[in-house]
Length: 104
Image 1: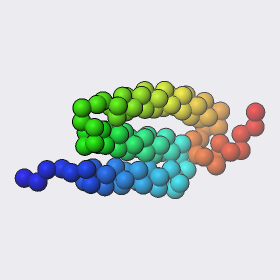
Image 2: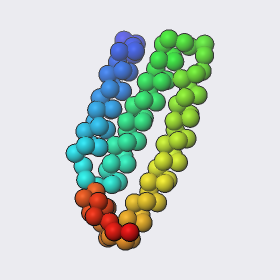
Image 3: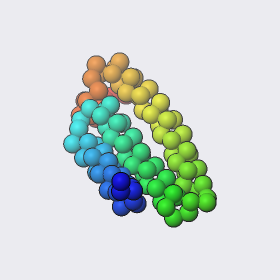
């Protein structure tokens, strides 16, 4: 059985990042945009953990950065969902183009 190398993990992480970037730039639904941003943040987390494991296995710096990013992503998701719910209540739509036409 072949061990998983750093290159394999980086390929998966890069593909996840570009899938998230594609979703962010091509979708108009705010929920899909939020999921795309979360996918990009998770690919960065994979990079931190992979480089920590293969370059500095005796330290936990990459793991600490990952925990910090997960905490920030959870707070970002909570605020974004609250904003999306308020937009839906006021406009009955979560489309990005409808949100651009808001009048305060």
